[in-house]
Length: 88
Length: 356
Image: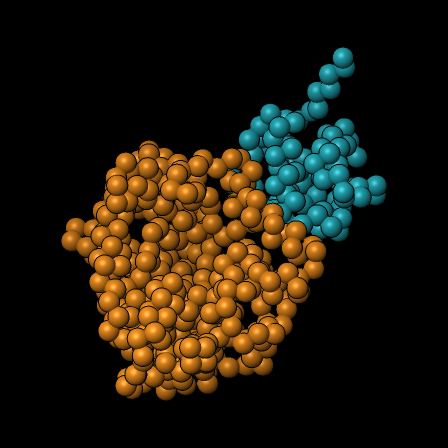
């Protein structure tokens, strides 16, 4: 996974700590990990907070967000193309 | 008076047979029917409900009068929409909007038009929120996302009017006629090709659906109400009025909702089994000749199977272990579901409570 995909996976891990993310790849469908539709809310909120964006309604479709790669595409459409890490 | 006796009285009412009740039973039946919102039955039993009907009429009129600015803007913008259920249903099924309590406006539009509809309503002072304990609460981002991802609606749009009788006008905006758990894809744009204009009150014109489509969307809505684990748990019972809505509307519109034509439209969208479910249970209650030709044409093995279960996800359906009369009158469905659903299913229900 590239840097942004890893960041997305970390965000999901933080939002859904009970989900086993050990074998996740960019193309793993979230349903295979046991992520239900209702869990997507936590993912969206976490993404919006982490990247300081609001995902517009047109993009808020589960089928367009159910893999790390698809989320990366959504983030690109929201203007996020790189991950900025701040070291204290 | 037990549940079976109540059901027998309901059949007698439809058969227009004489009903004799002692004062105690009459009071009890009146109480039950008022709770169920079945005011037309109270009239048939000569049980006074004029006050409730007058209140319903006033509130519905003021709601639509307050909402007319939305309809005017929608007409200007050319956005296709349709009003579902509510006052239109009351008018056509019961002949009097006072017979049904209706406090919000159910609205259907295509997903592509949602943004424009929201812009129009924001410009008129509407905000996304809910009414709790007669107070308006703005919805947080998580709840708004919940509606978008997990329901066939967007979060309600509410106008605070400052008016005593109708302090809020609430629009429930549907972007689909089928529940979000369904795999079916029913293009709302196609459904909205079958709208008609209706003058609900003097100078208040709205768009609604032609009878066959109105009936179908109503049946889908009522099917969802009677099968959603969350709604069954929250409401603890199935509403008797749902069956009256379906049966009375079909009775009034049977000349334009003929069995073959209705089946053809339903079959086109693969929803015949859900209509059969509604018709089947209406027949359980009303035993009416009117329903026979509909049941014959809609009947199938899968449709029959659906009548014995509840749950909107095909993979997670449960068999009903209590009779219809208990589901309607006993207020016990929360206990029934707690006994039957898995921990995971109960977790999903509690999440619905959290966001809704």
